[in-house]
Structure formats: C-alpha cells, structure tokens
Length: 363
Ligand SMILES: [Mn+2]
Figure 1 (cartoon, rainbow, N blue to C red):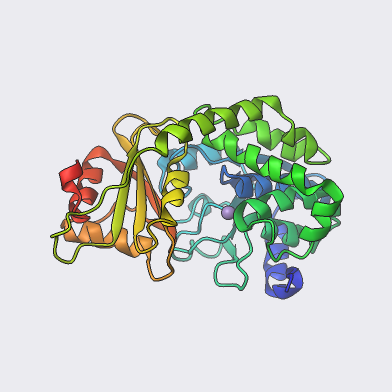
Figure 2: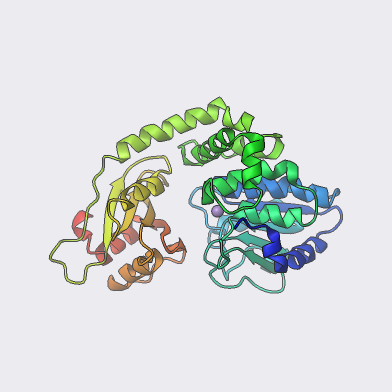
C-alpha cells in the first residue's frame, strides 16, 4: 500500500514547533548526508523552508568524507561558523551526543537510521522513520513534513531521487508512480546514478549535484550533466578493478569463527559499499566486509559491511570482533543498519578488528 504523511500525523506538530523557534529573519543551516537521499532531503529543506518563512536564510551543507555529525569535532566548528539560529540534520543518524544543542541552537533531526540515544532535550527534535513500516527514507520524510505546511508538488522529483536511491523504483511512497510518469523514470534514475557518482568519485564534488537539486525545475539537466557523467565513468573504472579482488575468510579450522568474508581494495573512490554488496549474493551466510585503504587520508581504513540475510547483524558482529580482541570499538564505528554498517578505522584499530575476526593472517 502506498503511504503518505497521513500515516505519521504525530510528526506534524513537532515539526511546526521547531519552525516556530526560528526568528522571522533567522538563519537555518541544513546539514545533510552526501548521498542522493541526503542531498535530496537537504535540497527539499533548502527550497521548501523559504516558502514557509520568506525572511529566513537557508544554507545547505553536505557532510564531508569520513565525517560523523556527532563525533567529529570539526563538524561543530563548521556548523557554528555558518551562524545558525536553527539547524536541521538529515540522513546522518541520531545520537545521544547531539550536535549544537549545547551551543543553544534548536536542532531538528530528520532521519531513518537506527537511533543511538536521544540528543539533549529540550533543544533537540527527533523525527525518525526508523521503526515505521515501511521505513521512509530522509528525502521522503523531508518532503512529507514540508508538504504538510505548503505546496511542494513541483519538487516531488527531488524527493523521488532520494526515494529511488534508498528504496528503489517500486518504493511505497505515494507520489512516486505519478512523479515517474511526469518527469520520465529514465531521467530520475539517471539523476540518482549521477548524484551517487559525485560522492563516490575521487573528486568528491557534492556541489555540482546539489546546485542542480536546489535550482532546476526537473531532473533532466542533472541527468545530462557531462561532468557528472565523467565521475560515473571514473567510478566504473575503479569498480572494474576492485571487483576482481577475491574475498578471504577466517581459517577453516578456527573454532567458533564469525561468519565473515573480507575483500581488501585500494581506491580513491567510495566503492567499498558496492564491492561488499556485490558479494552478498554469492556469500549469503556471511557478513561481507570491504576494506578500502585508499579512500581516506593515509593510515585510515574505510570499511563497509553488507549482509544478505536478516539473521546476520553487522553492528553486533563487528562489536563482537572487537570484544574478542579485548578492545572497545571506536565510538564512531559500526553504526547504521543491521545489514549495512561499517565505518572508519586507524591502521592500528583495523589490525585489532582483523584479529577479532580471526583474519590476522591477512594483515
Ligand atoms: Mn538515507
């Protein structure tokens, strides 16, 4: 059954209460995840909020490589430098640590990942799709929150880019079928692919897709952007190399081994999630981890885990590995979804993880 905001009336009043805290000529900063869903959610707030508060100045800031909204100290500095009277954090999780609450800024979280605690009251408002059925993605929620306040129908295509990216072309979002018809499914799909190519490519150029999402009146200019197409070609070339790396396993005779496989790559592109994903069909009973040694600064390892079975829980498995190695996992590690998790580790922490997984013979 297709679903609209009618399914979550309890979100409307807290959203309104957050808006009521913004002064008439206030500055609103929207801090969004850098993927297609996050950029689309950010752009929806970037375009929708001025319709609600014509005096508001709204700035959309995508997250950086390897950045955690709650635990990376430079994030707070960057957000404060934008002098927000109110902050929206979207598609970046929800964490007890909070973001700018201690600085006196009201913060609205619009998200769908597993929440990790409640950010500090009374300045935090949390609207999460996690636990709903179906779980709406961030762009879907952003759209429905704004559409409860004002006409957003001309921006359904922006929301559709987030929905298709996170939930697929057959997602249960009510306006999706009509939006595909109106704007052509082909252009929407292409726009999704190019938004994601922008954050995957070594150039990490988020501004280009964001400007399209903030200013265009249909998905076609984004879908036909040649610079974005060149990013996609770079990512495809990197992926073709990485796909040839074979997965490796704990030794067969290891007692009580965790159900894991590891693929190691060295690429500037954010392809580690794709590489992990490609193996889960062939390794349905294992958590597949892809470790990318070339994505972050030297000495940092980006790790993506994917699992094909709901019986596998990646955050639990990763935490268990650290426990077996006798160390606590870094705070920033193993968040996300039961079947999609990972994070960033120092070289030393990576060795600890390999040891806990019974993979130290690969270090
Ligand atoms: Mn998302």
